[in-house]
Amino acid sequence: MKKTICLSVLLAGLSLAIAPFASAKQHAFIWDSVHGMKDLGTLGGKNSYATGINDLGEVVGYSDFGNGTHAFTWTRAGGMVDIGIFFTGQASNQAASINEQGAIAGTGTRIVTGNDVPAFFQPPNTWTPLPNSPGYYLNFSFGINNSNQLTGQFYTDPVNAFFWDPANSIFFFLPTLPGGFHTVGNSINDFGHITGTGSTPSGSFDALLWTAGGGSQDIGSLNGSGYTAGGAVNNNDEVVGYNSPELAGFYWSQSTGLLPLQSLGGTMSAAFAINRHGQIAGFSSTADGTIHATLWSGHANAPQDLGTLGGTNSYARGVNNRGQVVGYSDKN
Image (cartoon, rainbow, N blue to C red; front, side):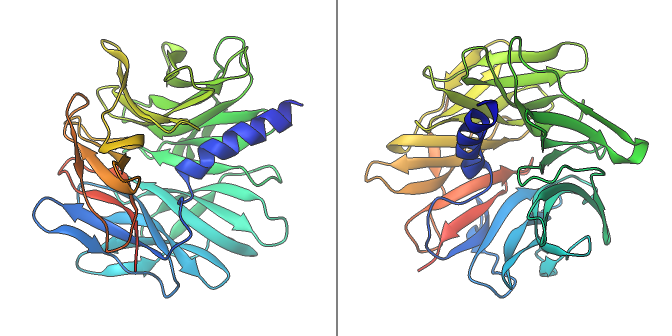
């Protein structure tokens, strides 16, 4: 029973965290206030998805490749580069986030078993899979900080948020929320503080913030939702995220508590990234029901519509401290 509840709820959250919403052709993009939205192309397949960007403008994500996906890096000078698979028998891999040294949090999928393995990529070409990953398909690395510490989720029934420091061979599960059972880690800042989601005694999932000194803090749910997740945390311990299935973005700090973000005129939004200046990236629906990549200059400010690559919908997933935004957009 615990596993069934976990899968139904966490898969809903993971569809936001990993997969696009539409089935149209989609391409990764980078956006800035001077050049607008630029198509990053693909690795030769139909689709690509940008998931993170550092302050050097290095972008990571994943693209269709053969029968699966391959993680990529992109720079203005070098374009999109396949960074390849990292173990024998791997079908696919994905990159989720990148730090200032170019190290990446990612995930690979084994061909034979189909299980996902959290992984750490260190330039120029070294992948390190998390040892002893269980034979299941819900193990992911989502976040990385500038000390090469990672977080994500590890499926052992319960699902466990983890802290992983590959260089020092440190790995542990985060404590649950009081009375809870499951946790997920989505983002880690340079102080090692982690945000994500955790189950409560009622069976709902609330956003959390974990620190070594304070443990796992329940930072609340949005609009009484059954699933609220912190998607990103910056070095000021400001958290942004989303709920499901209602789809509303939020901002949280210790002083303000949980606050909803304004939309582009529609009913849906979600936030996935926040930089040190408080700029927030995500998406919002418009008055006509389309979904557009969105940048909030501050949590109390009206959002900016970043447009699309010519298709109907677009989604922002990352923002760096220079205000550059990455994500993916429908293509005609």
